[in-house]
Length: 331
Image (tube, rainbow, N blue to C red; front, side):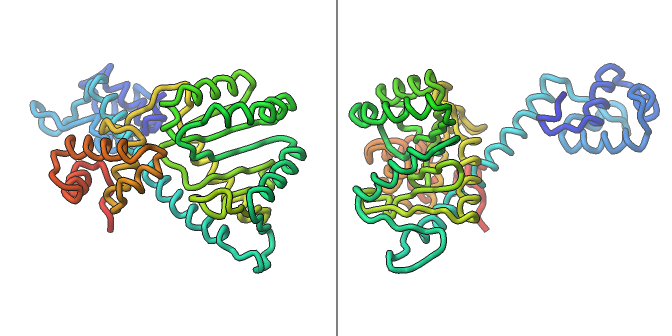
C-alpha cells in the first residue's frame, strides 16, 4: 500500500492497472479494478496532480503512466518535503510554547495564581523534586537541553533512574543532538535503554522541563540560571499543552541509537534549525546556546551553510535558502 506516500487506495489501484495495461482507456481500467468510470477519472486526476501520469507525446488525448522507479521517487520526494514543512511548523510551535512557558515562569512569587507554585533557590527546587519523584507512579517525561552530560551528573542520577525504572516507571528524555558527540552521554543513553528507559534527540529545545505523571510540570524560572528557582505547574490546561508539546517533540526526535536523518535538501536537523535562527537574525552565540554547541561550532555550521548556498553574507544566505525552498517564505 502506498497510502503512506500520499496516494489514495483508488489512485494506487488505477496506477497498478495502468502499469499492467498501458493502452487501456477509462472503461477498460474501470473493468480491471472493478470500480466505476467516474471513480477512475477522479483517480486519474489525482495521479496527474502527483505527476504519476502524463499526456502522451505520441498519442494525442491519451495518458502515459510513469514507470515505478521514477514514480516512487516523485512520491517520496513529495512526502519528504511535507515532513520538512511539518518540522518547520513544529519549530514555530516550540517557539510559541516557549513564550507561553516564559510568561508563567516569570510570575512574581507574591502573585497568586491557581495551579502555579513558585520555588525560590536551588535547595527548594531539589526538595520539591525529591517529593515528586518519591510519589511518581507511572510516567516521567523530560526535556534536557544540556550540551553534554558530565560523568559526575550521570553518576549522581543513576541510582534514582535505576530505582524508578525498577518500579516500572516509563521514562522518556529528549536531549539535544549535540550530546551525540559525547562518549559519556552515549554510554548513559545505552545504559538507560538496557534498564527500560527511552532517549531521543532534537536540534533545539524550548526549555528544561520535567513532567510527572502528566499531572505536574517543573520548569526553571530562568533558562540562563536554573539555580535561581523554578515554577511547579498543576493546572489542567497548562499540563495538557505541555504534554502535547512533549509528544510532538518526541515524535519528531531521533532515537539516539539511530543515525541522524537529513531532509530532502541534505540538511541535518541541527543545520536546519541553525539556518532558521541565522535567518531570524540570531548571533553565533545565540545559535550556539540554542543548539548546545560552542560558539566556534556555531560559526563553523554557519560557514558551511553559506558555502553550500554560495552566499557572501548571511542576508544573502537567507534569500538563497528561501529561493531554494530550504526556508519557508515569510508573509
